Image (cartoon, rainbow, N blue to C red; front, top):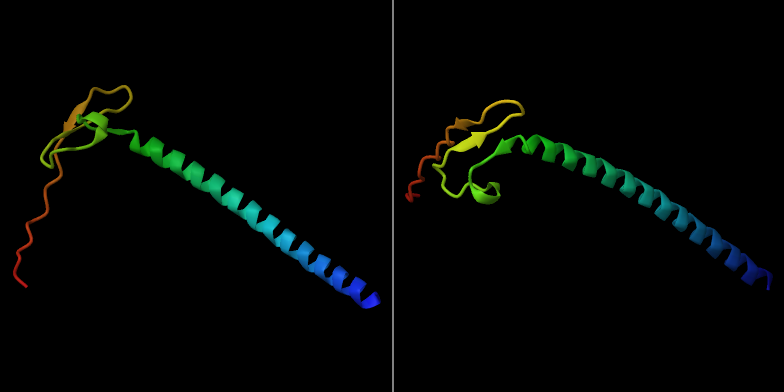
Length: 91
């Protein structure tokens, strides 16, 4: 019986250690999620500065010009980004 009680005590101590490790990992994951959420909000705020004339904010035509709107300023037209040179199919 003494041996069985010792094995149960050891098993409970191991279980307690694992539970504590899981709790620590969970807290770290929650903190990381909070940081990522803040960063996503910051990125969304930065990107909201840019607006395009296409529905949904997507540029459908590579040559299409975009409109930049800033708070308190009139919209201004920005030139479209140049397309990269065509790649030749020669190896």
